Amino acid sequence: MRILFDARFTRTDHHDGISRYGASLIAALAATDDVVMLVSDPRQLALLPEVPHVLINSPLSPAELFVAARINRLEPDVVVCPMQTMGSWGRRYPLVLTLHDLIYYQNPTPPSFLPLPVRALWRLYHLAYWPQRLLLDRADVVATISATTAELMRRYRLTRRPVLLVGNAPQPTQRRRDPDALRSASLLYMGSFMPYKNVETIIRAMDALPGHTLHLLSRISPERRAELEALPTAPGRVVFHGGVTDAEYEDLLADSTALVTLSRAEGYGLPLIEAMASGTPVIASDIPIFREVGGTAALFVDPDDPTALADAVRSLDEPGRWAEASRAGSERAATYSWAESAEQLREACRRAAQDYARRRTSRPLRVPSGPSGRNRP
Image (cartoon, rainbow, N blue to C red):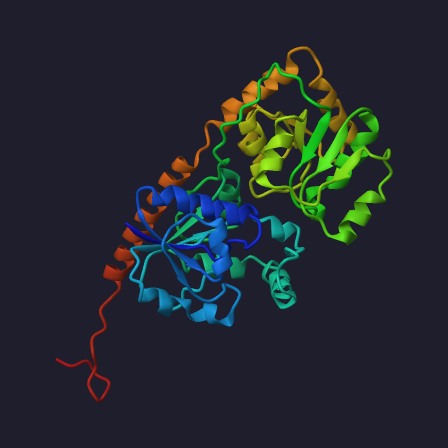
């Protein structure tokens, strides 16, 4: 199957969640299928697998309205986009669009890396569900990364198209922690610092955890850092890393007591799976998506209760409890793989091709009319 994969949402400096999701799916698909990537910036290739590519317009460009005309000439068997915003007017190919989550309907602050005009449109777009329905119904199949999001899509009737699961997965790693080895008192947080991520509650819990240090790993704006630094806590108990490499992330995971996240909403929660894959226990807010991802392996707490987080951290000091959580997390993470996600995407592509062909053959033929407007005999 000749799959054209829209890789234009790949970052040029470091992966975010969607960027890594797309790059990982491309690599897994390319092992068995004829995959061609669409890119909009040659710098994206540094973060993508060595797969043939075509350079076209940015997905944020006005030219996106007419991108299907360019793609038609490439004659793909199917086109896959890891987002839902791909231009599709005039397309002559099956199309799979992806909706990761519905976070921005409840938390309308757009990603800061988007240009100001796009951020304004982003806010308007998420004021109602009907724009989302218009986009998703332009596809043949809609993919999503979790059963939690699929259920929300059904609840809000976001599309008439089939919704299929194409899951996320941790990156392959050979590093597995020894559940009986020594560990530091470090706690890790990996993720953005948007308000719904609820990092403030994690910081407030540190007052009840003497001897522990919280490491905030992701990049952060100076303004947001100043807000978090203004929260009362003991000096030196919170460390801002301002971004870490993959290798540094693995080193920190291999040494810490737990990864913690108290997000009030989430599309998936990839850091949970990454931590569990390394054998690091996870303490997470008790929300449906984290229950889906973490199963019975994670420790779940009330996201608005700093004391509950502190109690969960201290529980890992009970004899055998940390080793038990480490083993359970490793077993849970082993149920996810990019090979399985790629097979899910192949099924979505096959379904898209079938439904596209069916709709084309079921269109009624137009009977030409004569000069008077009456049908010719």
